[in-house]
Length: 112
Length: 115
Image (tube, one colour):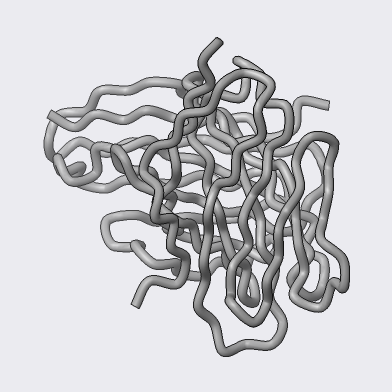
């Protein structure tokens, strides 16, 4: 079974609008971490935001926030006030013990 | 502070050739990782290391070897290259914090084509 599922292969959003990228996960371990990475067309992987399974509040980093719903096992990334430079692939990942497991990604395109 | 560096950026190999992908980090991180990313897919873990002299297999280790003689360097060796190894290879490192809060930082990647 997939450990990390990103069901949206592609998303479009207009500049300055907010967008939510979905991520669901599957684990029986009570201790885990959830990460989002951005991969622009240049190819590098850029760390965006982290949420721990025991964190009481949703993580936020500037225009990025993570909508963490533990009972539903979802960790959606919300990007507020989208910018053209946000166009990229976005990967959700889960950490169990020493390893990161990645989803297949969502391609976000921001249009003017 | 260069972070995680990888060489080469691009390489074309013939079937059966061997090569070493280099990875170095200057952040004094204990943990290092090698991933591969096939077109349209997420990253899959090949090997990882929790410290000098210690390595362990990830999800897709077949056809690869690693060594970790220093904290800074973590080379990945491909023996007898096959077309199935055509991919983009990423090296990453992390501090090695206990628990799950340990953020990984990635190098720029090596694009490898095997013909």
